[in-house]
Length: 493
Image (tube, rainbow, N blue to C red):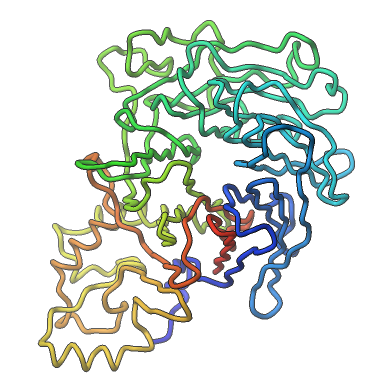
């Protein structure tokens, strides 16, 4: 059956290319980031890091998409400890437009790399432990944040005028009591999320940088976040976090999960509104003795946050595995992507969740059968058939099957019988409704549940690897996953 335009708008990425880097002993890659400043007409650029290696790739769209290595940069500096890079982030020199890559890891320093020249321009020092994550402020390409084992988050200025004293601020004190694993800037640049080994999620309010202390020997000290909670993930390590507008996505890790499954949680802070003026430092609540404290909710009886949806990620129990969220472009997206430790990439289209709620609200009762506005992504399930009939149907539908195994990978879109592939008489509407609820119904899911992925792509055989991170291109067309054994896998739509 031919795919209609209404169905194509819901297409999720397909596997395009698998590349294994052998030059450096098939090392683990921990981070991948797309260069965010390319125009839609240009080939996307992305960087991967791991060990002492930084590699930059380009994806070409001429014919079959493929990855092309542009640069191999080995970080080789005199130090007793071997470097192992955990994170990277792109920025650029606003005056020259030069692409710059910031990278950091085990040695606790930040390398500022001129990608065009292939050389390290500067090394930022000051952290007292491994650096786990880096982020560039959306409000300024000069403002860099770093998260460390030393329990602090630091804000740096990359502006050459502040080169002597690049440390602009330190977020410390009552924020975290253990390693900080993950950080994310709000799109306004005025709020920063952090999460770590103490199971705490903090929202810090930032001044507009550069502030009066930037470029001096006395950086701004921010001791109290305006929101802090250890209840989001029920006491488990938080190793990935992101903003989605004013909503928040966060992931926890647990090596031995018995009653609770690993999930990514979509949640919101009660009464948080980034369009309002940010609170002052003096308005930050005291943290001591409370599981959740929030400036944004003043009623002591009011809940401080609400879990909106959970996304099921079995085999996601490995520390330092990171999801990626695509941007919203031309009304398409965002799409959440996560690669498991058994090389299965899972996708959830968050726009489908909204459309599903609106669709269900328009129904009379639970009458899906007679609905005229059913979204194209809701594929009905066929009624069960005899073994012989089912076998004949599989032969007939081989070319349009929803789960396939091709050239060492498998794809599943969690569909049974494409829209229009069977008459209403052959549809099991009860089974269809239950399946859709498992994938799209949001509200108040239990902690031990999660929405099933809208699509899965598995890497099989010798190409199987442990996933570490997923990243999306600026236009949302390309998705790259990296991980163990030097694998770099490209998906596109």
